[in-house]
Length: 322
Image 1 (cartoon, rainbow, N blue to C red):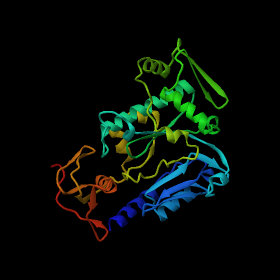
Image 2 (cartoon, rainbow, N blue to C red):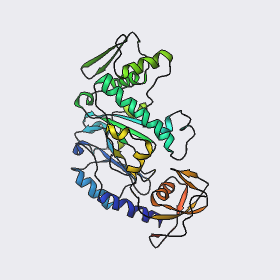
Image 3 (tube, rainbow, N blue to C red):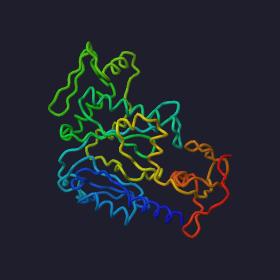
Image 4 (cartoon, helix red, strand yellow):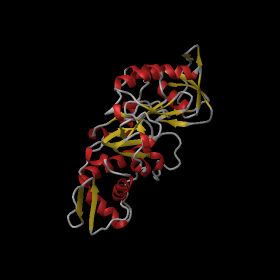
């Protein structure tokens, strides 16, 4: 019953969703089916065709390839005809060794703030050190993605992407002269004239404390699938939303507020274990009536069962807050 309730919510969301998949006809599309099976090597001719598919068969998660292919639906990777790939970065609070993120199970705003700061540092470094414009996206969970879609980076192979990653995380750099290759362009940065975020880089390298903390495997993998902006996150039920630079300057709570797909109503839940505070809401009872987005989040996290009868949530006295 809960699965059908969730499917109905997801279907209704996708009816009004705007899916951001540029050059979709050249992208491999993958999705997480309701039974938890990952399906890959699909292709769609347009965003509208993809949207219709999501309404008809609502996926738990939706992904597309950073790479462009001649034949994106080929199952044999060598037969796809690789045409290049966007440069994609993933910053996940789960990978940050900060007091707010260390040992984190459920999402909290403090850890997401740490991830937001890393995303800002990355965007700053891409723009001011490498002359690249990144497009930030809130992942709908614990972190942020940054897409660079310029032709200049699409031809970079895995080794060249690895060297870019080394540069951004401050690995194996000569402090007297820094340079990085972006396609055919060599970017030279001199220690005696630090500009923009290079000054930040130099200070950090001097005391050994600086690093932009990214999931390096995501950036170096030229066949990577990344969550589609505009789609729902299968771990939270929140939307992955594209952000502007000014959006990213807002606090984490404001960003999550924009990503809430299911704002209306309340749902009864039975907790499988104590959860305490969830996104600023203290839940102090085994059975509670909570906002729909909290109920879906706890269900997808495996922390609660939805109390659903006849396809509708079981209402009761408001019981969250201790």
